[in-house]
Image (cartoon, rainbow, N blue to C red; front, side):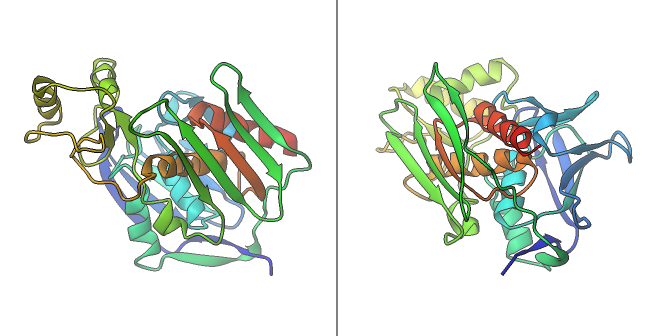
Length: 305
């Protein structure tokens, strides 16, 4: 049986700080007609300030995925794109009144809780879903890091991802998704992560201005002093922080032992949606990140033309 296209059943609104800019933005996810795809509209610029969420419009992959058209941009779209894909939304218009999609809790869970778990959720439309089906394998590699994303023709979609940061805390982690696994319970709720030693650098370089202890897993790879922990508490404006025995900052507790790998899979699903639709392919990724993910999405689009 062929699946139909779907859109959201009503308008859903979300508000919060952007992870990198720290600017508060409000977004609304609205129903859209058959064949519309996913589009973003900068309402602070105008009614016609619309950007298609496709790989040709990717303008930056510096720690998040940004799409642009002319002088207008929308940053950090990957979690929302992943949520819409994981929930099976073909068509939606996302209005945003600022430059960056809010980070919320660092995962896709707020979108899932609002759209999937409540309200009218997702509604079927009167047209078949158009899957992206490849004639041959597409592979993007980074010879310097060994990273790759391989996309092979298949009868149904599946994802296998491995992360390796040469980290004693993380180790080598893997994550898998296919249609038999509930994205909403197993992938979408997994949060972004950062290494403790990266945080001060990111702050100094005007990144993660909207980061706080509620929206990121912090990995403490190297021994840290009480003074460093105190400084981190000041940066985040929270009471004293500590380090758990497993090497994670005690700001939050893991939802899964491999939550970090699952989050990278969440990102991959969102970035590959920039291929323009739902891939019917077997996807294997090693050391995936926004740059190689979006290059793979672009390669898919070129192969289908």
